[in-house]
Length: 308
Ligand SMILES: Nc1ncnc2c1ncn2[C@@H]1O[C@H](COP(=O)(O)OP(=O)(O)OP(=O)(O)O)[C@@H](O)[C@H]1O
Image (cartoon, rainbow, N blue to C red; front, top):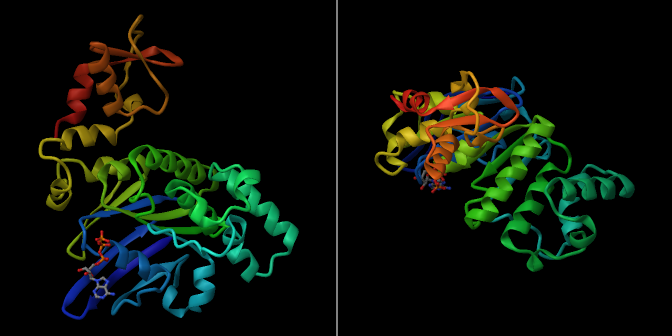
């Protein structure tokens, strides 16, 4: 678990963090969401001690990080940043092996781990192992950055706007890879973004930051509920809060008993926003569930769920 307890920090006249308190349960992917300058990166950097808070504590697994050796602490925390920061003179494999080498892993173990990680992030080891960072696309470089952060199997991953510089399609591909990795490894992940859609695609919990303070924290559906804070409303196009709320709710949760023969079928894992879009696309007011013929979803249930 990562716990922030009354964390405050100033940079000169700027109050970057003000009394931030919340916890990220072990195994949760928590998105830190907020406008530019709201303190997201500073908060993230208190976990690996790139920022030492002026007040308050950050606990990792119940221990105050202030008491840890910074180098040892950072080796146990994967860190992924927007600019990737790959070492240009090292191959892809050399970059991924950075921490295993520092930890003294032998060659065979390091090479096996490197190839397994390349597979995990969706890059063919034989094709990419020996490439230099300069020959990679932005999306490929970010995949290597993610593999490098995972190399020594740290239980905690910090990700600072990791996909922000990528085009929408590449970004969705990396989000899917991260969802897969999170589901497969159960790591505790803290990910910073200013994009609510990205937050909804990834988050188990969302912490909303505004002017250095925690404006809201909870599950996506709760954070987007009736009390959705003003800073969060400012981050989306006016009038789209209900649609975002639907994107945070699984369609299966609003299903009703009874079949809907001939109705378009929703794939497993679809949200209510997916359901609404499918209805609009197909001109249907009822949907069926693929693989679950005994249940259906009606337009009225979607409208009820969207209401504040
Ligand atoms: N090293 C620093 N020196 C001085 N001021 C800083 C420093 N780092 C951050 N700040 C200031 O602290 C505030 C919070 O910055 P931070 O980078 O945490 O925000 P952010 O929400 O991550 O923003 P962005 O989305 O633009 O990256 C900002 O006003 C910023 O200018």
